[in-house]
Length: 356
Image 1 (cartoon, helix red, strand yellow):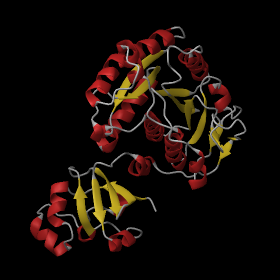
Image 2 (cartoon, helix red, strand yellow; image 1 turned 135 degrees about the horizontal axis):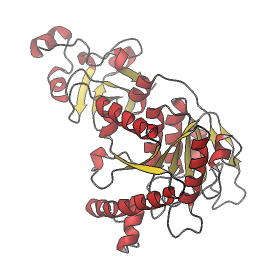
Image 3 (tube, rainbow, N blue to C red; image 1 turned 120 degrees about the horizontal axis):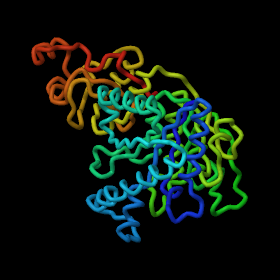
Image 4 (cartoon, helix red, strand yellow; image 1 turned 90 degrees about the horizontal axis):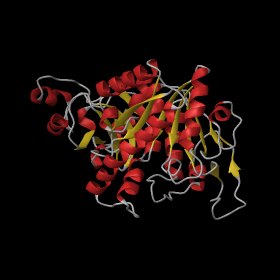
């Protein structure tokens, strides 16, 4: 089985009494001996930077956060390097931004690099590049990143480890009688209502974001586990024997459709009218149905498609944002007179993924 393991900052805090990185290294060695592949997505760079700088509060200004990440990433990777060496494991650092998923060539290059690292016997250790990422390039949180990596690699399972034993019907920290939900077949509004957006000193995500990330992975055909990283065993999780929440896969898509469906594209947006929205169920998106364009993008970029305030699809644009500004709302006969390198469709139906 091929798995992605996501570690939260709280788990790898060097002040913890349990060394989670040591446990992960030990279990990763055993999993690899049994023919499994393991990729790790870890938070913690900002946390390590804060500790090295003696900061008691998470900075709010971007340059300070980026500086913490820059300093902390070195110490974070040194911990992985030193710990993994005890088990004859070699980590390979990979730092990412949203653009690495937005553009198909970069996406394929990233996938090939990670698979080559695995081929060399290395353990990819992945983090968001918080040192240089500005708001437009941020992935949001590493729960989201872990789901994107799982989908990109077409792995079997995503394991999200945190400091809570899984998804409960109420907050277990305030209600000791809260019940653990051991299996979720579909993440719906009721399940989301159980989760909280609460974060800690070192984290940016909450259980709601973990569920949102799990939902993406499950829709791409990937099994997901959410549980307590201080107490769980990777082998038991893989064997479906561990205490926690298992989320069942709900569909199977081709690799290309997975990329169209789940890669981030929010900074590049096309708005369409209701008529075009209805037509998307059967046909391509034509320039005549476009009402507004947000963001700057080139031909072949992955863009979000909105009707009103609702996101309805993602797809690859045949035109740049500048070209679409010139031809939005126009019929094909008019577009031909404006754009010499003419496409009838703004986005072809084969390059669309519908969300509704």
